[in-house]
Length: 226
Image (cartoon, rainbow, N blue to C red; front, side, top):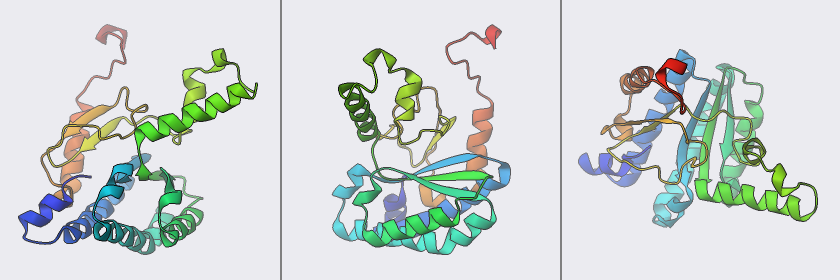
């Protein structure tokens, strides 16, 4: 969800104002995905690299997350949306952790959509964590090395039980993965747009999905084999 800072600069506002506007785009995106039947939505809300940003901006982002959880928890529950997280959430401030726990508990019965927030998340860190866990099991004699299949490895990722993403949307004209779901996106379709995240609305989301629907996903096969 890129472009909050550039949107703020474009409108002669501070970066935090851009993040606040970006939070509105989050609400629009979540509601639209629920309405059109998207079953899983993962939002890259805060990366491990984002900790290097100015302390004031990091603090503001944490406050915005709390505001979002407080304001949206009821709607998430009523719309059947279950909240999950990936990433090192233990690194977040205690109030943020508490609101996350409360919201996940409040929405745990949701069966219509899963909203996954990637917080203090890094794809390389996730792969390292899975590798260390498997290495520990091998060292303890609980798992033979030859027993490590693709399926077993995926069971040790933070996204275990969640299907790989079909579509990645990257806003604000950026053309990189930025350490996001590196294992999971082996066959994901990418959609790039110059639209800054705060301006990302329902129409742009539907435009991205329409573009995705025009693509032929072969997964290594030929068109004739599909």
